[in-house]
Length: 334
Image 1 (cartoon, rainbow, N blue to C red):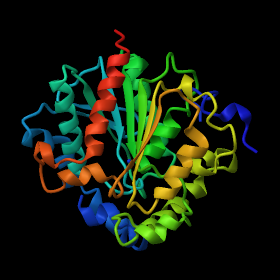
Image 2: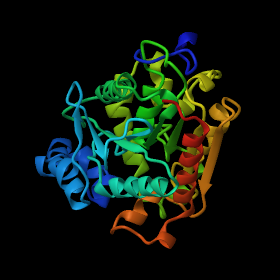
Image 3: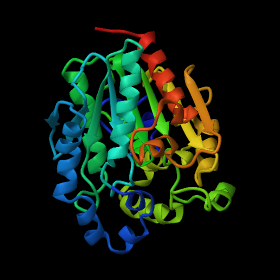
């Protein structure tokens, strides 16, 4: 049984998310991990993400080196007063796709139109198999601590993660050695990874519609994360299976929590169950959005072939913008 001191409200600041095919279909990576990962994380790819993408968009190149090979890449200018810290998905084996950067740059510009200058910090964490879990968790904790220790108040930080990045978000906000000085402004989980053994009806119902290869990812999840996680910590990486009360005290970690899934997503039922069982009633600011017609990480794919027009983005994108506007407007510290 997990230690009752190891719940969200009790754990604190340091203890214990480039192609569409490689991003969404990991079967070949599981069969040929070293060859595929080396291709996925080639030096050219990393350089494009860290250096050429900012130049392409006429933005400053701001890279902060952290410990253990982790880096923070700032989208646009570095702004430390209000920050979104983003953990990208990809099962810990796929590099950050540039269309995710395009999406968050779009959100950043919409916030600027609303009078909010927000820094977007992207954690460039180490990937499997060169680095195994929980290396990525330690890097996520380091990134959060770096922001706080260099002057960003927790009330002005939103953490966002998709899929495996959502897994990092959940654990990094609880896996710390000292309490947060104040709750975070908010956390957002987009299509989070909540279970390595999906047997829900949505798996069969939505396999023809979704881009996520859930069975392959489940095997990868157990291999990369589950086998390296002691039973007492299992709920951190498979939160759907957390014992009752595991998320008690969530208000002390974040003022607001937003979770979203697509109704055409193979993991839909698991994400819905996770929200209902573990998050409802744990914080006054909890919201769940089930996107009609949405697939896994749906908002990103409006940007896969370039920047869409204003009327070409989905409703969830507008929701994300409004949620961030509301969060940064509620508290303005520093």
